[in-house]
Amino acid sequence: MEVLDNIPVDLELARVLRRLRLRELNERIEETVRELTELARPVAKPKAAYAVCYLENRDADSLDIGGVRFTSRVLRVNLDRIERVFPYVVTCGRELDEIAVPAEDFTRRYYLDAIKEMAMRSALSYLEGHLKAKYAVGQLSRISPGSLESWPITQQRELFSVLGDVKAAIGVELTESYLMIPLKSVSGIFFPTEVRFEGCQLCPREVCRERRAPYDPKLAQKYREA
Image (cartoon, rainbow, N blue to C red; front, side, top):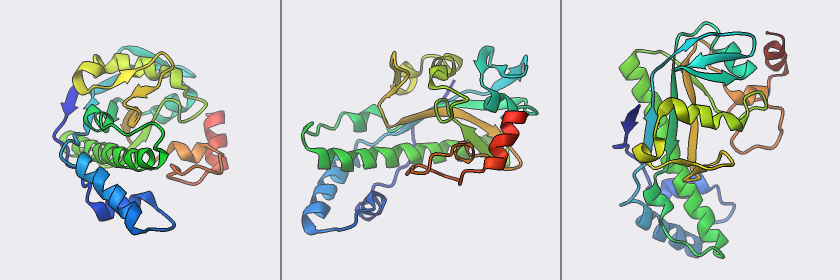
């Protein structure tokens, strides 16, 4: 497992306000966001952990990655002609997660969650750039357990086992319900591809603020028939 923990993150006030996408902005809101960014900026330390793994023992709906068995048709189809992949976990970091906000202050909690997500997304982007540069890959796609019905979130356990002691390395703990702590963490597998793939292309859910690509029913049918 490799660890990246010196990851830059831009938490300037103007950028945070844009990320919040607020319909209305006033002095009170701006001051609250400023206070939170000033708390977050000096302690923000997003992190990433990843491994370089090779694929073996493919069959119709499963394959081995780094010696661990994964069962998912969409995962197997995506990795059908690929030999090397990069399982990863990325987090906003426990430093941000430990900033105290009263549980009943939903507005501050919402603003702080946005700041944490910005830090996490910065780490994810940094990791992708690092992998492209270090391992000489042109384009990477990624897929995460739980993002699609055909790769259930229960396989978080297998993903973490490929990486090793993720909690000791970057402070991310996997709960019994397969969620990660800090909550603003994301896991998955980066893989090289000529045509960029997004799990969103196979998901018909209409309302999703995290959607990165439109639903493609023809592509979804192709994966079912592959």
